[in-house]
Length: 65
Image (cartoon, rainbow, N blue to C red; front, side, top):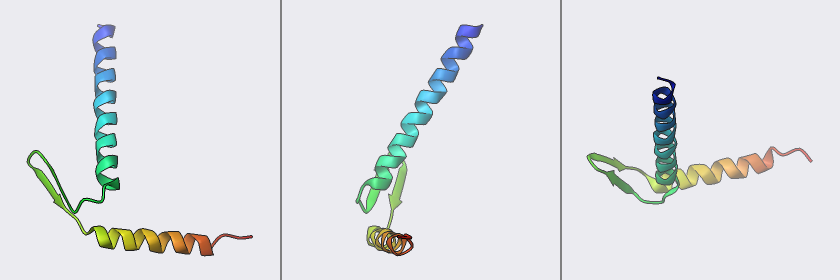
């Protein structure tokens, strides 16, 4: 009985890790349209780049020397 529980916990952990890695890759990509099977995501890449640039410049200003 324990072997079955260990298998399923390992299986769920591996699938969860792979899913999170896939979402990480999709988030870091600069593609405007991403399609995985029946899921299609359109996003504004330019707006995301401007937001990232804004956050990075304001973090540098808040650093205490």
